[in-house]
Each structure stands twice: as C-alpha cells, then as structure tokens.
Length: 428
Image (tube, rainbow, N blue to C red; front, side):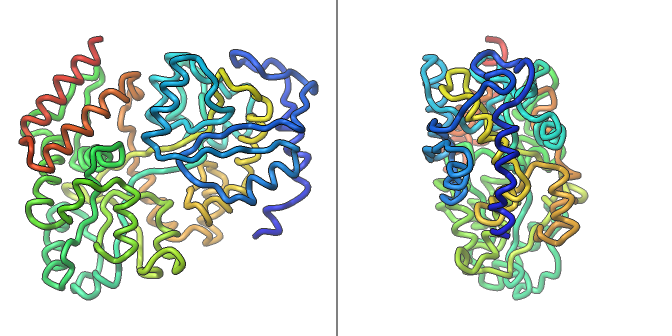
C-alpha cells in the first residue's frame, strides 16, 4: 500500500491541481491559468484530528510547500474559526469545515466557494457527501470524512449473554441490555452525554431513529411536546442513566472518551458511533477488544431507524494567505491512495463515491455490507439546510440536555427552554 501511496507520478497531478484554469469564481486570491508558483510557501492547516506526519512530509517533498498542522478539539476549532473570521483576521490557509458550519459561515461570506477552483470531476465524485456543504449554488468545502452515525457492538459480550444478533428495535434493545447486565456487563451501553457537540449528537440521532425531526420546514421546534420523538429521545437518555444502562460518568463524556471506554471493554454497545471508529476498534494496537467488534444498524421503533450524516470538509478562508497552495493541498488529500491511507491509519471514511464502491467490492472496507445498508438510512438532520444560528442552538442544547441527564432539570423543563431559545434564534 505504501508503495502506491508514494507514487511519484502524482507530482503531475499536484501541478495540475495547483495551476487550475479559467475564472476561479471565488471571492479573491486564486491565480489564473499557469501563473501560479507555490514552491517555498508554508500553509497553516487547522483541524481537530492528527494526520500521519509522512503524509504531510510527502506533500512538502513533491510540491515544495510545507504544512504546519494545528490540531485541537472540535469545539475549540469552531470557536477559533468564529472569532478569527468575525474579526476578518488570518486564521489558516485550510481549515476544518463541519456540516454544521455551512449556514453560518456561508451567510457571513467567510469562505471561498470551491466549485470552480477544484477539479470538477472531484467535485462530482464528492457530490453525495458534499451536499451538506452546498448553499446558494456554491460548494464551500471538500468532504474528507464521510461520517454518519451507526452502532458498534462487542460480539464476545453478546455471545456470553446469549445474544445472536444486534437489536433492530428499541424494545429489543431494552431486552438485550437486560441480558447483557445479567451476564455481568455492568454498563452495557456507551452514550456520550457531556455538554459538548459530541454529547448532543446522540439526542439528534435518537430523535431521527424514533421517527421524528427536530424542526419543521419553517424551523418551528418539534421536540418539546411529550409525545414527540425528541422528547422521547431525551427521556431515553435520562432513563439510561437512572436504570444503570450507561455509566454515571457518561454525563461528563464526550464522544472520543466514550469510544475509548468501549475499546477498553467497558461497554458492549456504542450506540452512536462512526464508521471511522470500526478499524480502530479492531486494531490490536489500539483496542483491547480487537477482532470482536461489528457494526450494526441504528435501532428504530418497528425496525432499523433513520440516522444522519456529519460530514467534515476542508475549506479555504477568504483571509487565507496562500490560496493556490491550499487548493493544491486539498486536491492532494483527495487522491484515492491518500484517502485509503487516512482511512486505515486515521479512521476517516472517504467521501469519494467511486472509492467507497471500490473498497466495498475489494473487501478493504470492514463491515462494508452494514456500512452500505446504514447509508441507505441516512437522512438530513436539517432537510432545509443547517440554519445560520445552528451554533447558538447547539450551545444551548449542550447545557440544557446535560442538565437533564444529570438530573438538574426535568426533561420537560430542559426541552421547553430549548424550544424557546430556538424560536428566539429563528425569529432574530
């Protein structure tokens, strides 16, 4: 694989990617035609994840462009981007661009549209995942992590509990949890519930899986009524704490620590996980339950439920200093062999449709059958597009939902306050 990864022929690809052609269509800063020289430049990249050092070194070797990578957690990345872009100051040449940023960042004009500066064939190959980054006729990011929610489970623990398959409904999930506890698994479920973005994602997921939506087409909140899916979803999480289905410490766990506990054998089910966690969970160097983890469809009311995507992309701020080098870096990243390496070593499921199909056919994609089936259940969290005030809504949701699972607020009080905040934001 490494021999393929370091193919020298890609030098030509990088030259083409860096040179581009025609009118960029972006706000500014891209050189037309063949008038660009990027050798000797240094670009800053801000991401929430580590990237293999040799990946960055090889880009530098082939292009003469050095990459300085700044890695911090997701919430800190978002805060940093908002502060810098609001002030119209330089933050980096390439940054994280989450699906949830689209409404706010695009409306503010903080990022360059990419559809006319990135290879059109690449844009087409990314089109399914990149839909989350499209608004106003422009594409603001190139998807690098095809993230969506599915479940992972420990087959050893299931066998010890006499369970032959993963539950398809929430009723079956309750019975499975009871059997797992009886077999000696103290806390069968892993669900992050901290006051973070990762801690509110399970509530979003459970709302969809229970047959509901957070908002109607006019952004009227639908989750405050006791009969709504959103209400039942939060009640499920509160009950999971009270019933001992999850560890009491779950109320302080973000998604990464929740996965670490699952990989250490502390729980049998990670209810809201990512496809990218599967290879890590089955890697004996990183997991104590390696070879015993399988993916599963999210349970629903009468069968497998709906889930949603959380794609993450690479984007170029309008304040970037080296936009052509940034463009070259994005297209370099998106080369199939590079994407394969990042999936194998960093757990980033590729977004290129052609590559996913190839990996599923070749057997390179562990659990490929289930991963493909779950993709068929993916629906938009916001069918009309994430609102520009999503970040403010999420911040309120983080505190209120966390207060509910801790027992500081009732489910009714938490969701009533959150609905009021949502109405205020939508009307502002």
